[in-house]
Length: 122
Image 1: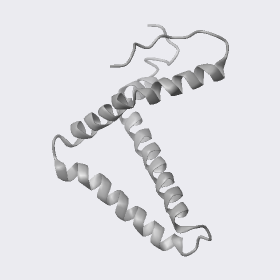
Image 2: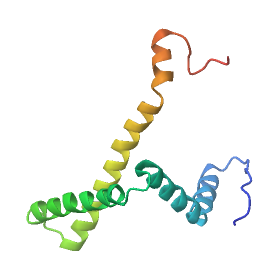
Image 3: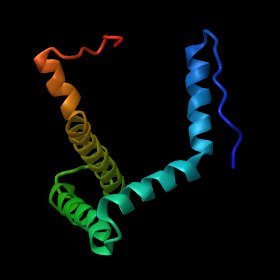
Image 4: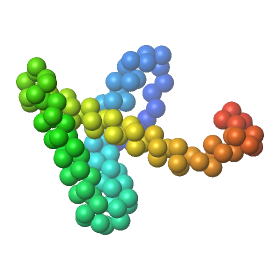
């Protein structure tokens, strides 16, 4: 287990950002295990559901590489890497944004009724 996290308070924002990045990368086992736990919880032990995430992504990415690869003037391996990384980031942002909005539904509807505000201290 790694050392406990201590908050460093100083005025150097870049140094703080690099420190946080290094600390996060050093704890890669933590975020890998949290990711695996999320997938297990989402599909509740279904091997087919977890495999479907990977298979559907690879089929869609492979189709895009095949279709747009002929149009690209770059080397095929670089094009495939950029396309797959970009597709993964896009899908992550698109699904995470929806998940956040669904999870915050109660709070967001209370804002519409005037019951709560983001700056209230109740």
